[in-house]
Length: 174
Image 1 (cartoon, helix red, strand yellow):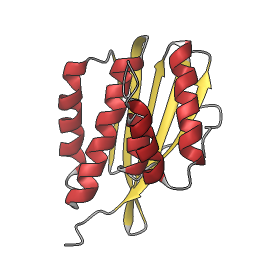
Image 2: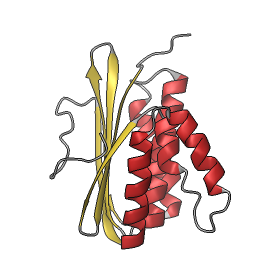
Image 3: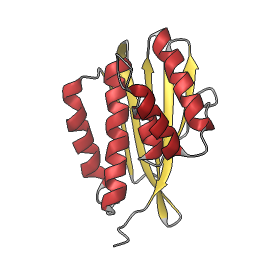
Image 4: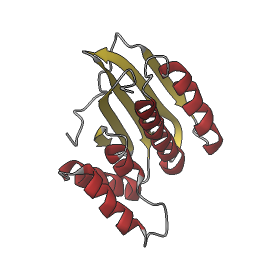
């Protein structure tokens, strides 16, 4: 899925962890927010690999809010709920962005969702980023490939909503 339906995505009402932040993003806050969320989800996500991938996803999304938002507040909605033997993760961000950023983000998400192999696509994005003067453009592809999550988005005017979803293991297989 590459486009969200209009309106806000529905996140689990029976969440193990649910945090909704509405704030003015600053780079100094990224580590603290990552630490806060990890302290809440680690008791449920005991698999170190899954926990590390989830932290990567959270960090990339928070960093994008800092880099590309043009107005405050932004929204960051984090949710983990049980789903069968696993855990369902849904993270929604919403922010205002400049038209050129929205166009670039839509193109990146469209290409990302059309890719049959997330890792091969990520490798292509890495190669293409070598010539960029501003930003690497790797974050969303990294979420898809390394974070093993699906992304969808919605653009309405200057508002960008990104939804990241996936299933993770609650406990270590080691």
